[in-house]
Length: 187
Image (cartoon, rainbow, N blue to C red):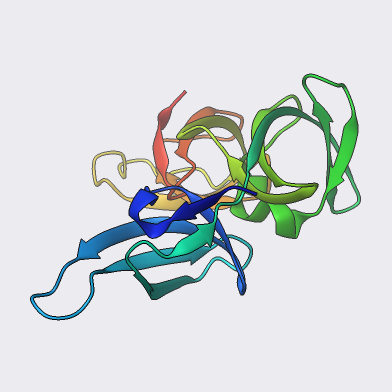
């Protein structure tokens, strides 16, 4: 793994520290009037998801993790697990729901997904900002409620329940924001 100094940090960079894999969320070089310069960072634990604040000496050496981003196609579910095919080598891999995290709520048959790999371990997914999914079930909206701007729960084809406007009916395609899980528009 390449060794870099804290002077080379960039947002989004992944570091292999002694207590795990961390992605740089934010960093700030601080040069006080007295004493040595340092780098204050906000790091997100890639495996656990929590965020920690950490301070490094300026110029301190850290290990940069090599994250391989590869295109995969979702094939099918096998029990709770997801089976993907590598778009280049056509190798199939089985991925647990825990490794996918919230991304599993937006993946349907034939979806293309970019998986982030550290060696052979899946440490993240790179989904598009929005996806189009079909409403599997929702209650009909009441006549006359069309202009009130109210919402109702709807179950998507993946099993995720979201809030949609009252005029949305079952079997309609809707656009969903993958970062917040909110309804955006009809597809």
